[in-house]
Length: 244
Image 1 (cartoon, rainbow, N blue to C red):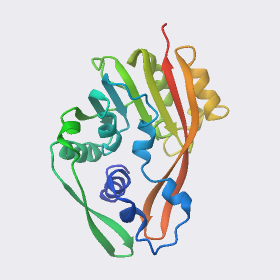
Image 2: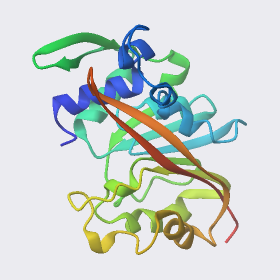
Image 3: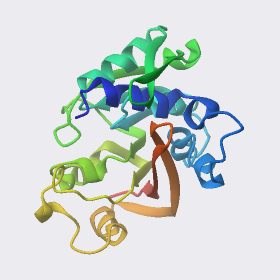
Image 4: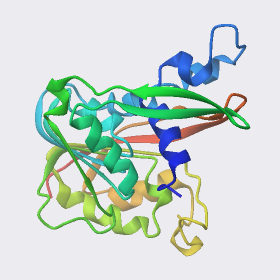
């Protein structure tokens, strides 16, 4: 499903759309929670500390909005996603291109929009590659920051990723995981779901390699049409890698 043109357009809007492009004009009476759900890809990254570091990894980067946000405080960031179409879009933006896309309003009514390339200072710090978060290439190395937003509950074998995280994050480095905990059999077989609640499961898997810094929630909104939106709330956990 993540190779479809419609999903690509929805995610370009989700990552790069302005408030009025996502929600409409000021005359549209949307509840305040809709506004609070905007800017999710930057809000999750904002939980990292702000001191400059060398390397960052954005797993499940989609079309790259969070990767570019990480580059504000990382000298190098790798954005990785399973979708070829998402990565091609992120690579085009990294090369300084603008991307035309369409917002579905209703029925056959479409609005033409453009995703603008980020500043060159951010683009030159980023690179994007297609890959599988459960089968990461062996030569990735270690990172000061690893970010994975709305990914865990879309993997067929989420434990495969969690087991790979301790070697990926340097001692003293940071990990941010965000998930709406929408475990669905179409993505993850039920026998791979957490046996209890997702937070307890994450804590059990990540300790003692990581210390929990913060647990909270971040809302997000994805527009499907002018009157149909996905409003969800992700469980966000921020971890610090401890020495083995």
